[in-house]
Amino acid sequence: MNDKNVILHIKDVGYRAGENTILQHVDFCLSPGEFKLITGPSGCGKSTLLKIVASLLSPTEGAILFEGKDIATLSPEGYRQQVSYCVQTPSLFGETVYDNLIFPWKIRNKTPEPERFITDLTRFGLSQDTLTKSITELSGGEKQRVSLIRNLQFLPKVLLLDEVTSALDESNKRNVNEIIHRYVREQNVAVLWVTHDSTEISHADDVIRLQAQGGKMQEANRGRA
Image (cartoon, rainbow, N blue to C red; front, side):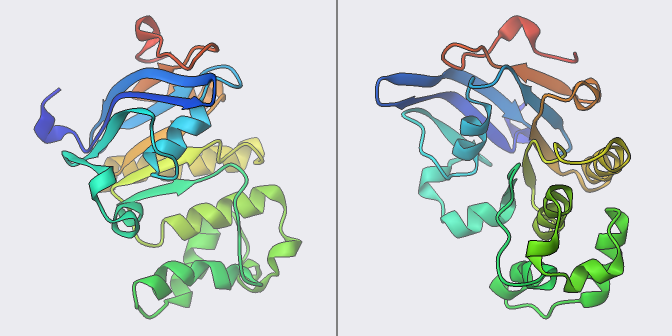
């Protein structure tokens, strides 16, 4: 792959926790407009890998390069605005959904656009009154979508998604998949998505499978499922 077309390089990454090897020799690249999935059995290190890419954990071996630079040398705040991480069980804060959606605007010192929030909620299958709901009233699936909307207020160059449709019914799951694919096609966003869902796997540009023992990449099984 031409390095000029690589936005993210996971370079021979390994991770150990005490005596346990969680990941070893994970090496692949992600390009703008590429939709890549990570799958494998529970405990193989998928979420750990995503946390390392999100700069929430430091690899014990290897490095993560963003636009050719080791992320250890970059400002964490600046990096996380370009490489946005959305977790399976989202952490919402404040009192209402509105409190969460204005946060990306606040940290950029920009004036929020509430009408855009309404549009985004509708696109993701949520009613307008969701905006003023208490976060304690939300279901798991609603929380996942609110968290994703929050991450998409300012489009990142790379979107990291960890089982973000696990609490959704099939209709909403398809809708979220279509929206993410549209960002990939139309806005050239690069997506790295951890999933077990066979439907999501079948639509990927590339599938990386991690082994159960030690999180090694299964090179022979890369590519479309």
